[in-house]
Image 1 (cartoon, rainbow, N blue to C red):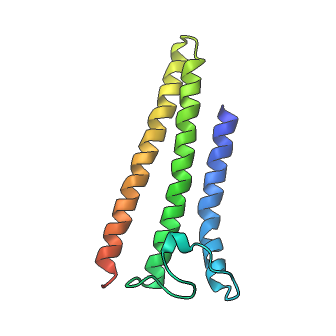
Image 2 (cartoon, rainbow, N blue to C red; image 1 turned 45 degrees about the vertical axis):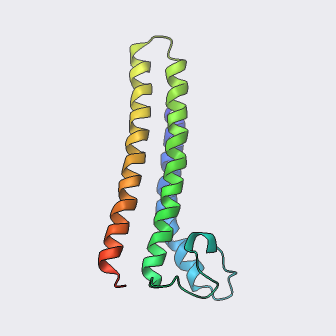
Image 3 (cartoon, helix red, strand yellow; image 1 turned 90 degrees about the horizontal axis):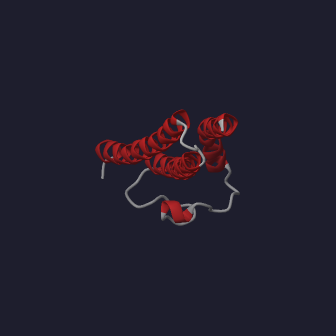
Length: 128
């Protein structure tokens, strides 16, 4: 389980560091087909009405990261439940499983609060 957790943590760190590079590369490519229209709600070559490009990019990046973290948190809750089931009454295994579930739920709460904070900051910073 420690190896699986280490692999998941490594993947998350890699995604967090390389996602901004990928997003900048996708924006600078003028020949790129308009992907992500469902996320931004805009038309090809146009910004969402009332939102500058930077604010829109921040929203898209936060939404993608939130989706990834949400999926990983749900997977960790399932792993924690599986660990709880196979613990066999061992108190160390039970506490480890409970901690896994607890930390996954805390991660979900942090992601939800990050969404709220980003929305609040963008409303205050970006003029309408």
